[in-house]
Amino acid sequence: MPNAAALQPGNELAGKVALITGASGNIGRAIGLSLAAGGAAIAVNARASRNAADKVAGEIAEAGGQADVFMADIVDAAAVGAMVEGVIRRFGRIDILVLNAAVRSQAPFPEMRYSEWRRILDISLDGSFHCAKACLPAMIGAGGGSIVAIGGMLALAGAKNRVHGSVAKHGLVGMTRALALDLAQYGIRVNCVSPGDISRTGTAAAAAPSVPAGQIPLGRKGEPEEIAAAVRFLCGPASSFMTGQTLHVNGGQMML
Image 1 (cartoon, helix red, strand yellow):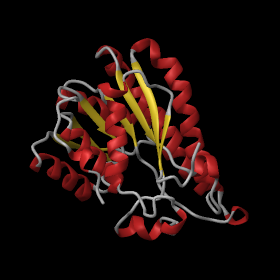
Image 2 (cartoon, helix red, strand yellow):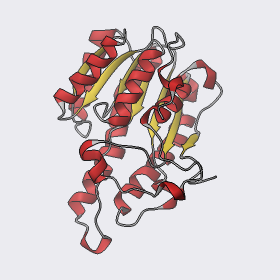
Image 3 (cartoon, rainbow, N blue to C red):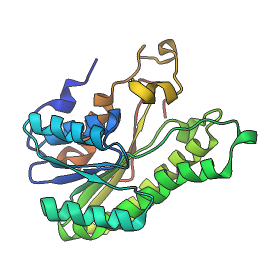
Image 4 (cartoon, rainbow, N blue to C red):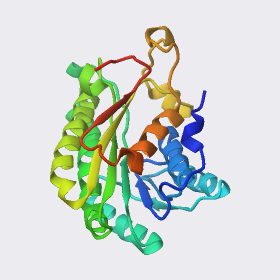
């Protein structure tokens, strides 16, 4: 049951440029289409999935939006810097940064390798650090902006065999709050969207742990467009007095 609000045409983001990391996956794609529907030009980032990234950019263009692909491994600070320079050359500015890139991994803690622990944290935390730092001058130059991190319920509830993921997502919540305080002086708002169990396709569906729909009060999994609608809200003027907050979009699976 896709959320029609996510793709509702609008102009609240007209003239804005949004960089979305990990934009070739289900949620990243939905966020790109949603922000483009609001009028933003979209910089589609992916690490390795060039074909998937091109497809997302193509879908945005077919819907009447502007988009281009910027390949970069966000763990590499130099690659992030080059990506951000490329986005500014292409679109002239960066107003919105969506920190969506992440990888899923499961392993019992006694069997977990440090290299896998490090890989998950590097992408979610170091990658977010590099992207926020690289985009900051452009946002300050534009007179403000919006950063939205994509968290997860495991940040607060934990998850069996996913201690690395729980730590990474919890770190994003902490980063959201701390950056919100540091960057408010520049007119930059920082918030987080925490998805519940979201419908996925392809390899992502096979890798993702799932919760029976009966355990979700609303009786179903969420759709990527419902996460995208929350991100679009946090990027737009309707949330102009919100910063440092986490929106829980989980069908009531966790209530705070």
